[in-house]
Amino acid sequence: MQYPIYTEITSCRDCYKCVRICPVKAIQIKDGHAMIIKERCTFCGKCVHVCPNKAKKIRDDVSRVRMAMRSGRMKICSLAPSFSSEFRGEEKKLLAVLKKLGFDAVSETAIGAQIVSDAIDMHMKENGGKCNWIGTACPSVVELVKKYYPDSVERLAPIPSPLQVHSAYLRKLYGDDILIVFIGPCVAKKHEADENPGYPDFAITFNELKEWLKAENIDIDDADPSDSLSFIPSRAGISSLYPVEGGQIATSRIWSKNLVHPSAIALSGSDQVISALADKHEPTAFLELLSCDGGCVNGPGTERDYSIAFRKKASGDFTTERLCETNLFSGDEEFTKYVLENGYKIIKAEQPGVENSFKKEHTEDEIKRALVELGKLSAQDELNCGGCGYPTCRDMAIAYLDGMAEIEMCVTKMRKEAQSKVDVLLRTVPMGVVIVDSDLKIADCNMQFLKLFGDMEESVLDETMLSFVRGLPLERFVPFSEKFKDQFYLTHPGQYRMHFKDKFIRVTFFLVESKRLLGALFDDITNPTIKRETVVKKAEDVIQKSLETVQQIASLLGENAAETEIMLNSLIDAFSVHSAEGSDENFTLEDDRDKL
Image (tube, rainbow, N blue to C red; front, side, top):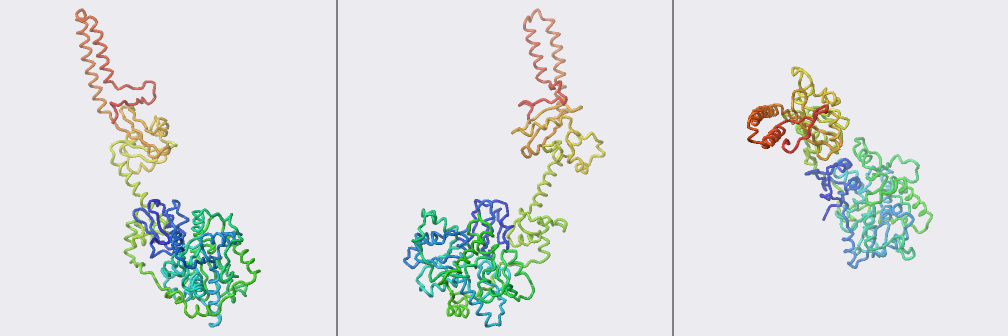
């Protein structure tokens, strides 16, 4: 079975966005692909929405749910309280379409939330109003503590999550022979279902529900509200506010009486949660921590068309209307006491423990060696640009030692290596080379180019001169610079032969980057050209002598003499280096015989 979140390898590209957004860096880059490591993942789902190629996927469990619903058991939907922000004003229609999908009943997960809050209240009354627990309502936070903050594991509330408590409560009311399917905004709930089968049996997101409705050709807008299911055992009350930051504290019968809650703090979003857990000060307050910014209303399994503010308001409006109703769930004292006394035993599980065996310790020498491999030879080389996805070069080095990162992820190292290869090529190539931008300014060149066109004494030419040349206009060196302009827009730039000062030069243009960077190779072919001209001169001498002989025997050859002269003159033409007279640079487009 796939992990709740996985990577579609064929769609993954080298962008490292998921590494950058992942709060715990649970992404391994291997062969250029970003793989999610289950042992490190907290299932927050942030990587899913940030991936530009949709390579990060949430496991679709609808097919498994549909198969399980054929079992004949009573099918109960545990509906997350954030449905009020996802299906605004469509509560009864939602209950109607759930009935069409085959559910026998719907119960609000918020009932389990109320029981959790009541259990915390009960604990506080027994302990003088003190409680420095970390709430377990968010399974992503629980995973974060277990894997990355082992010193805080003992602070995790000894009470299962609202969904797990709700599942246990439903089994108490309706027996074990029921099928419980959670529908909500959370991906981490899938992990809860995987780890603790039956509490619930399955978990799907709101987005999966919508896709399921599409597959069944069910339109929620066309649903008949009068043909809908009713909430069992009753409708939830104030605990409907659980999915927003501070909702759990507001649900408490103790904290809700006070305007300020110095003994209870609500935080949401990975940055704030991690900051709170990393705080080394002595804990003195209950921490309500939610992984998603703003709370569950902004979970990864929701639509992203509405702001957090809009979602919070929708949830608040819904709860306010609820509180005006009668027959709302008011708690179950007996079951609450059972939950507080038995904790995770109610779901046949153990209290969460430390799970960070993947963590490795590295010596300072190992980290320094890794930094050297990444091209960070000194502190000045550690730019901490974040291009690799890690906040610092040191973090990247540690990830490299852990096998989570590849050297190629370091953008600055790759750029330096590429530049180094270009520099070596420019230094070693025997021809003059220049690369110019679209403004005809020199981006790079080599010493051979300066020797050909620099008009400098060779004694002053050295590698330092190259840095001074970069950025200067090409026309300062090459009198035929306008020839470069036309080459930018050719699919296949040309090759030319020219006479410059006392030299014959072959010029070969090539595109480095279309319409942005153009290169030119200058090959000094003076010696071969002079040799060819010498041959032509000797041929001319032979031709002249032949013509004198021809004139002497003209009477014998008749018309053949004229034909011979034409033929010999053609031979001269064939050997001559033609210059484009009237052209300032004496450029000649080479034919196939002259091309390299």
